[in-house]
Image (cartoon, rainbow, N blue to C red; front, top):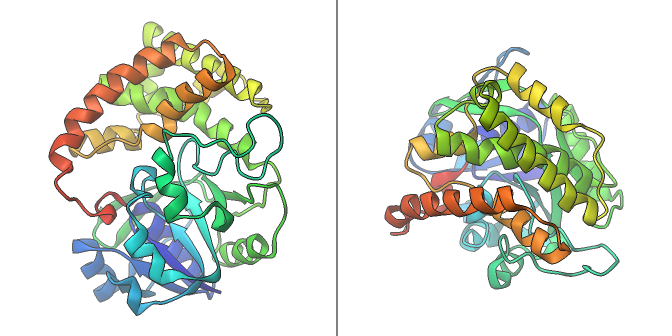
Length: 336
């Protein structure tokens, strides 16, 4: 299988190395110091499951690669609308785009029936900009349960998890999903094909919606948020509000709020990706994780006062971060 990794950052390079290890024809799209290291030395992965190395083709120009069977998007969701110039050279008539993002995806109401069929979530697809760049027909959803970080250019530290759940928006088990899953499994990763990927989306979002913005606003780890009685209750309230929105959309999760909090506390002093972005002065990935859920609450009539307040404050902070970054940072700058 011929696969391009668009945004070969922490997650993208890890997936690319694993796919290459499994025998796939992999092409990494990156930039800057990361690209230079990938070209010179390939990807070195350090992991509790065993270190490994792979040296797939790496480039900053997707025109060198051309059409592929699948593109794995390692970009943050806020960069999807602007990735067209990088994505278009990789697309053939049947190319699938595997979108590994946190939160609510732009394709959420594609392939469903009911009152919201075809509805566009403006927070993640403003004026249809993402749908024009990545047509929903190409989309394969992906929920990432792996944690990685860039230890140095070309060196990926795998912390935990190897599961990448994928699924078609319409719930079918397609040939393209089976092919991509097989390539991932051959590389040593878990890649179940889910008929109801929206369930997985909300299970992961249950933690992201509370811990990601609160960690940035308080400069705290997940365990610190859980150990403080006030912030723990706020996190629990945000989770309960999110689950109410999910239920109104027909998604019911079996994980309790207390179980989710206990798991986060056991994770120790884990710094969320949103806190990492804040500390590096980069715009935070909030639209898909938080703002979209507030938008869905308005759509379904759910009351979400805690989510609404945290979203307002976090959005103001994000606007302060985005102002200096708006002067033309390329999408790959936030990959991984």
